Length: 201
Length: 101
Image 1 (cartoon, helix red, strand yellow):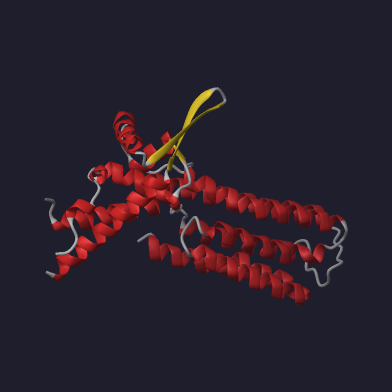
Image 2 (tube, one colour):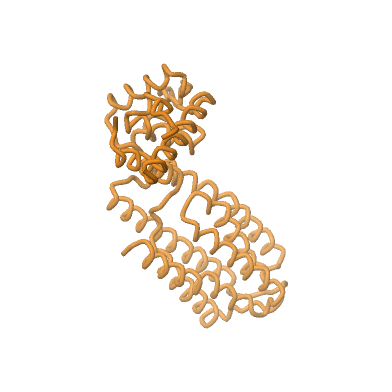
């Protein structure tokens, strides 16, 4: 007959295997902090260098191509940082970054994000530039909630905050850039610091 | 003690087989490579344990080809799910009764 400790170990093993195979746990807190800093810098540059501050739904700016490039740059930088830091974290835990859990996470994030991205481009073509910032918040929030079930629970919570910020900023469109900085800048930084202290020390 | 150790299924005595069942309990289906990564075992070792579970009728195998390479997907059968749930319940009961005594 087995000892009692053995059975407790069995249960612990079952739980850890279920966790490990259903949730992607290599998201890095630093990725959140850095993404937040990029967002702050990007929004500041758009506001001060390119004089971008949509105050109504129909809005025009002579610097639109430059601002689009800037936004794309911030997005790419944040993505590359997140992928690199996740890869490093996974490597340290002796896991691979491209596995069943990360694939599932990415697919579930990608669907709302691409939908939102396409919608924003279409609306921008019609001059509804004021909606760009609120819609990025909304669709990013939806993506986080959609993917939240495949990673740590805090991601879900962050998704809810982004959606609330997105909805409010549609109403107060003249402050939409400020709400955008709050969501992508401040919330990311707070989330990153929390993650760092909760899971990485 | 009112639960019998017979309630523990012999197929789950091995940690690796228990691991395979745990992973398949939360994933609809997985291929060999993913299973190997999660369990951190060698090919031969995993294949042996899978065969044993397959014989019991606890896991189903679906063979297909992706880009002309064989791809085998494993999933839990309803019989396997029943046995695994039963095993879990028995484990919990044993731990509980041992705590009390």
